[in-house]
Image (cartoon, rainbow, N blue to C red; front, side, top):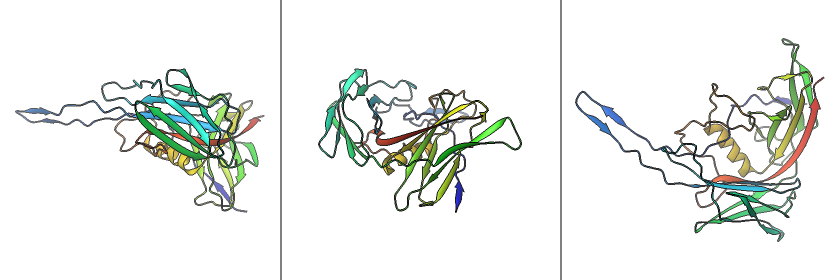
Length: 281
């Protein structure tokens, strides 16, 4: 049986959408020429998911900022937000806080295709996502490090499904704190293979409770996270926080691939969730 270890992935923070206009300052012995920095046109950012777990589900909407207002991401209020599926179910979400829209009734089911529609400031935005059948782990286990006996490695094992496009993200929690790492997998080169996936960038110790959420989604959601990983680089010197937040480097050449129409940023995903827990002892 063929085993494949998926190597460590780049660290990354939660993506901060911003547009940086370029500036050029040319200095000679006699002249200083400056180019004005203009403000960037704000763009809408929509982020939402529906899962096979009990709701409510949330959609958040805000605007991008410009060079002169870093970190200022104004929420968008008063939007008309709806989630519907391909079997006729539909729900209008309620705005429970500024820019935050919540479901009350709709339930995610594997195999259905979901549509998010947003009307805001005279513009319409839509996204489609099909919720796949969940990929499941065969096991989640740990091994003592031969060189550092007080440290442990955690590895999950699963069988990739033959002739099914599998796209997953593994969210790792240690003692209830979400890892900063983004662990992604697609089966482009490993269709049907048995996979051992080690969380290389983590250090675990005896007594740690480890929880892993296995998220299975369609290709459009995978492409969002994959391009996000490629675009946003993690500053090794920054302090981390438990939700993956932090400062993204500015001046990136592109934005992550979005499945939203009308030039909106963000994504909408229909996701299955499987949770696994072990205690290292």
